[in-house]
Amino acid sequence: MIHYPKNGYLFMTHAFFKNRSITSLYMWGMLIIFLFVILFTTLVVYEEYSDLEKETAVIRKQYIEEQKSTIRYDIDRVLGFIEHSYGSWKNILDEEKLKSQVINAIEELYGRPDGTGYVFIYDFNGTNLSDPIHLQNKGKNLYTFKDPNGVEVIKELINVSQEPDGGFVKYMWIKPGTGMAASKLSYARAFKPWKWMVGTGVYLDEVEKLIVQRKAVLKDLLVKYMMDIFTLTVIFLGIGFAGIAIINKMIGKEIDTFRSFFKKAAKSHTTIDEEQIHLREFKRMVKYINTMVDTIHKRNEKLQEMNLTLEKKVEEKTEDLREKNRLLEKEKEFSESLVKAQDSFIKHSIHEINTPLAVIMMHIDMHKIKFGEDKYLSQIEAASKMIANIYDDLSYMVKKDRFEYDKKWISFSLFLEERIAFFAEIARGNKHRIISKIEPEITLWFSDIELQRIIDNNLSNAVKYADRNSNIEVTLDHKEEGRTVLSFKTHSKPIEDTGLIFEPFHQEESVHGGFGLGLEIVRSICEKEGVKVEVISDTEITIFSYTFHNSTERSPDEDPLA
Image 1 (tube, helix red, strand yellow):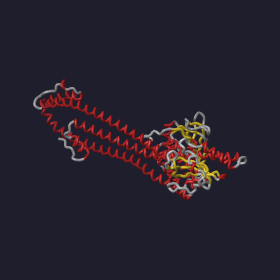
Image 2 (cartoon, helix red, strand yellow):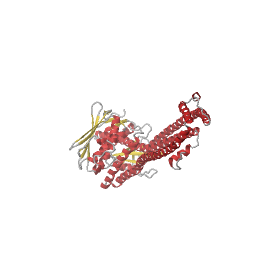
Image 3 (cartoon, helix red, strand yellow):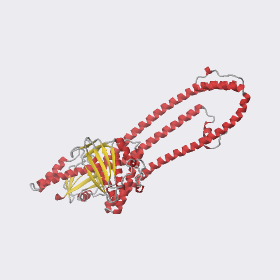
Image 4 (spheres, one colour):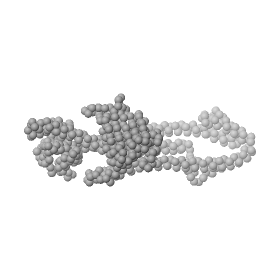
């Protein structure tokens, strides 16, 4: 008789299956599948809400940056108009009359349909000269006016307007059409010949409306997912139960036939009628069972002797197989736990890096605003930006197989300038200077997240590997047939194998650190989007070139998204 061990996985498996019917095993299998469906649905809902929270922060930041760019552009145009009028008419018209005409023109030309995009003008003493929405303020001195949070709105706007590039102020102000105070961000610049502060702003409550809309869409989508999954689960369970009932009935009938035969065979020499068996698997057994019965009755004594030896061998073999299976199961469980732990570690590490990194970057900006530039702070800022680049790489690696990054028309020229500005502090900290030659007004149909990964990883590698005190040259040229070439040129040691550098975890020099994933990410994006990659490296220079398609060159007055 075979004895099962009283411990370990095999014992628990045997205990579970002991004295159970086929029907109960089917039911347990259906229950386990149902529990996995519930677990999967829960994970889907959790992941979607988690991703929405991260996306919400990105939407707020992008919305504010876009609005800053818009209102700054508006004021630049208004100041351009004022400067042109001043230069053309100052020696022809009376100054007060000229001022009045300029103000009237601005009030007629600028503004949005909802009344939120108006331009306001104050003199440096705080007297309101133009406010087409709040007409009651015209002529009043609001220099000491404070919003509900204690911000001296007009005073701060006048102060920042006199800076070389103007400045932004965030405060509370009555929103047109609502009569309620709302958060507002304004940009102001000074026209010093007339001592004017000229500004405009945007109300920030629109981004919250956008986020509420996205949450509502996600909620509806998740409800639909759950209903679809629930419906399919119910259908499959119903089909499964019906199938179980039919199969059990058929198997039970065949088993009853075998049971009746074995009762008779134990007392007399009898065989099974093959016509009584219908299932193919059992039908195959009939021939062998009948042969076995014949052999048993003919060689009963010899078989009994053989059984004693066979049982011992079977017991030894079974025990050996159990031991091997137990070891294999342990190895399998260990491998699965190791993979899960590694995946969990990467995801949690990325999540845990994000918050302190954001806090570091925010406090660096606040320190620079409050105390100015500092060489030690610049080194910290450069290092933080390098960590931010590594974080973005890891975040992209984790998400790239689960997300489809949407494409849009991007101002390639402006985008590249922004990324160069981001790495400028890092380059200075490593004794480099980034020299750019960027052809203006180039647009590209591409994912902004994936384009940033290409640019950032090349700039990061250029800073790491370029010779000390050498320049890093970045070029963007528009070619014929919708092609644009982006290149990064450095003076550095020659690359031994330009093919290996795009392999994961490969590093030319381990002293520079990093994970060796940057160029592997770049290669995967370029292969997916059909971007041609060329690398030239010798003892003098190293050049990485990327040829993009679907790019355009537009005039300064052309809308890049048209």
